Length: 199
Picture 1 (cartoon, rainbow, N blue to C red):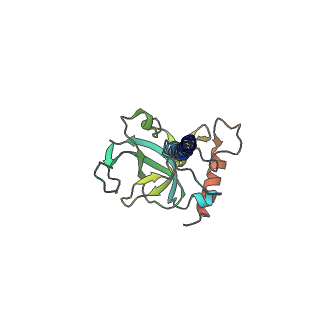
Picture 2 (picture 1 turned 60 degrees about the vertical axis):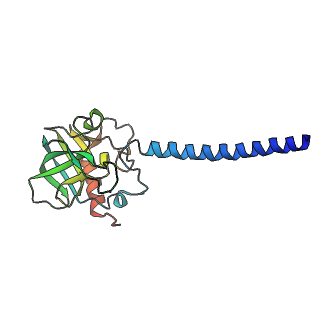
Picture 3 (picture 1 turned 180 degrees about the horizontal axis):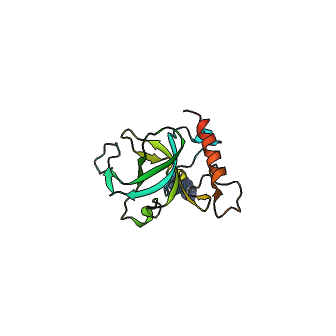
């Protein structure tokens, strides 16, 4: 009887260890996925900007003329629930084409999120401000930013700043908290775009 009890306890402990380990691994993966999806930008596995820029179609320097009204865009995924998302367009006056081709004096820049959403709208380009945009063209002729914040650079006092977390795009000089020199930044991104590695 005592031997059966010892075996039962040992078996119960073994099962609880296995279940606990599996639950711990599952929870760890869930936390990693949640952290990865907490921001829209995608962490890159590319080693160079040339690899990173494979889908860049246009790089422009210009002024934000206006912001349009937020609209819903279909995700293209068929689900029972609504899978559309908010998009807020902005009109950009093209002052200089740094890479790619456009004959347009203005382009439509699509921004993720609603102007009613404070967290999203905080990242929007601002009317009257100068920007450098690294862009991917849509089938409709409008443009998305390449990899969310990575493609949006604000210009002020000869410097560029961004919410980008990309180590490839940020300055190698970690002390440059006021932004990167605009000319050095333009030279870097144009060189990468001209030598991009197609996927």
